[in-house]
Amino acid sequence: MSRQPRTDPVPHLTAVAAALAPPGQPRPVFPVADRALAAVLGHKLFTLLLHHEDTGESERVYTNQPAAYPVGGRKPLNLTPPMQRLFRDHQPYLGRTAADIREVFFDHALIASLGCASVLNLPVVWDGHLLGTVNLLHEERWYDETDLPVGLPFAALLVPAYLALTRA
Image (cartoon, rainbow, N blue to C red; front, side, top):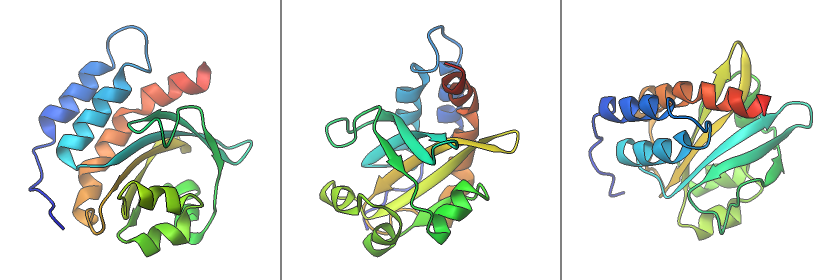
């Protein structure tokens, strides 16, 4: 693992908060969140998924790899125990290895083809309801428990953007 020392998250949290102010939301804040989380935690693949509780699907609303993971794509939930904790209990999911990813994601082969073998899924929650997830993927063993208290405030900052999506 060639993980770099983590960067101070405060200036990046400030940038995401500021990106919520301009008109045209929610789309303008997404690339800012992408850049901020790339700087603070790192990722090869970054996606934002909107949860559709009524259909049991997640819809991709932002991606940094549109050829592999286009915006608008939907996928059914694979409610393995880790995903139940994420979607039902609103607990983040940390997968450290390719085996962890194979256990949880239908698209594990595509994920592996992008050089990703670890994942950090952060719930975006408002008023007791899961709105969606912030998903960061990188090389094996990139993420650990110390990344959760850094990543979760970014997910919380995106609540207004997700609320805007649910009202669109």
